[in-house]
Length: 211
Length: 193
Image (cartoon, rainbow over all chains, first blue to last red; front, side, top):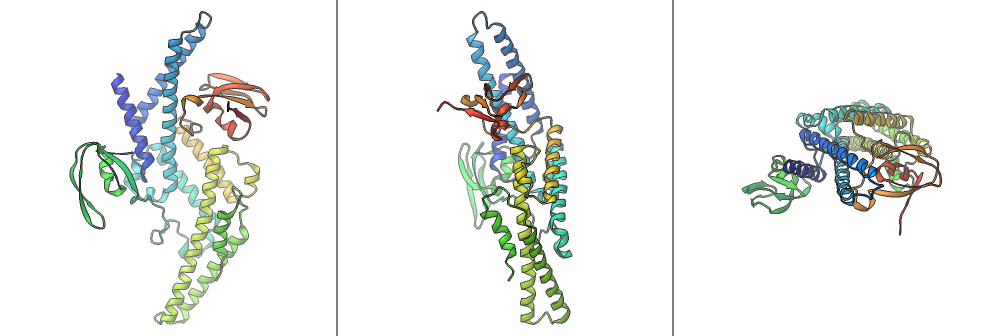
């Protein structure tokens, strides 16, 4: 039981770290988020019970050990509360930054949670309406488009950004195409600062983690 | 050359206000400049031979002037929209009046609708995303606060307890429960140093 909880926690922390450091939005971690929320609820219930017990026993000298334990649990729950909200907020942030790009890219769009997809649709509508009413509709017809790809008017994540990452398993020699083609032998536990676009396929199947 | 587009964007960068007054006048000037370019373009296309180098450079000039002005308008509105979104996270669903005064009608509508959209999302996922903006540390899980203006009863500890925040009293509470009141100046965080 403890070990599974620990895996959930470390997986979630990794998901948060990946999301925080990548320019793109990753697929929504449906299962992980459900598990984390369950974990928070269970722990909070135990904390509440402990606090009740401490209150009752207050008269006949308090149980220091229980208090100590409860405080540590509370700290853990609060950290998770932070990570969970921070994770979801970062994702909203990316959706708001690249609404047109995500809407046009079916694969990315479908990797969002159902609620995030609703938010994206709603947000794009607001964004479009605001721009149109404020000035787009008053411009000459050919300039009225909001998603003018040719004119570079669609904000996109900068996938050529460099990211720091750790290799989780031996990947052997991998070929990268940049200005010149180059080969790298990616060994377990090595760290690199590398072009995000190159390393992206490995992040998704957990062979590489962002740090 | 018309400089109102640059001025518009500069205004956002150089201002010391969170959100300067919506500059209808300058925006109209930029829109007029776009119209002017468009008319010149149409005129050239109708009357001149686009193959001559002089004419084609004139075409390009107006074409890019128009695009650039559109871009200025986009930047101006987008940046202001981002500010409004940031304010939604900081202040909740009502804009402070000194900011609301500086908004266009469209912007006020945007803020209202964006606020509803966010609230809807949080209701859908059954999680309040306000609060927990900074990672909790051992020292600030609970903090001591002094009440500066009467707030009345608030829920703390995951809506299990009620605390009455009366002016002048001090309390020892969970930080996330009172974060928003500290931000808008109703509570003061008492620190030891």
